[in-house]
Length: 110
Length: 117
Image (cartoon, rainbow over all chains, first blue to last red; front, side, top):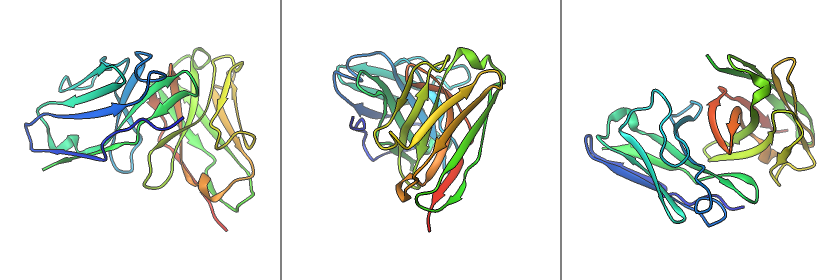
């Protein structure tokens, strides 16, 4: 099972919106609505930001939103803030190995 | 509140063994699947293993199959990972994670395993 494909880096200015893509196959992203997104600051454990494609856990800012089209899921961060600078990983349930992570995206706030 | 606290990491020589533990609190441990996820230095996340709430269903990544054993003790609210025949490429931070349908809603702080001579 190969990792889901994410762009290595995405950047934006404060206040702007950015979108991170996560591309898989019909056996994972495209086949199930169990896509989640995690934020990881340096030296810290990841934090769940989006689950089941588009749901936000309690306490997560509504500036974070998720969607999916076909085999590609997306995480959008609107009103970009300095504290959003971090690594982001997607994950999906998969029929073959149960779970697979994305390659990770470094978000830089310019 | 939900807490997951890992222990047992450290420095071990190639071919050696280590047992990681995870103490869970703040939720009904026996109701949840649990996982071990690792992150090599400067690298991404990798599912290592998961175990169902009862322990009857277990998954291992190909990279650790035959060398690692996951287990749980629901009476002690604890998750374990026995790691044998360790290799340099097993060097990573190992996270204990509460899991549902390959979604992790709570992570431990992680424990570092270093395999080096």
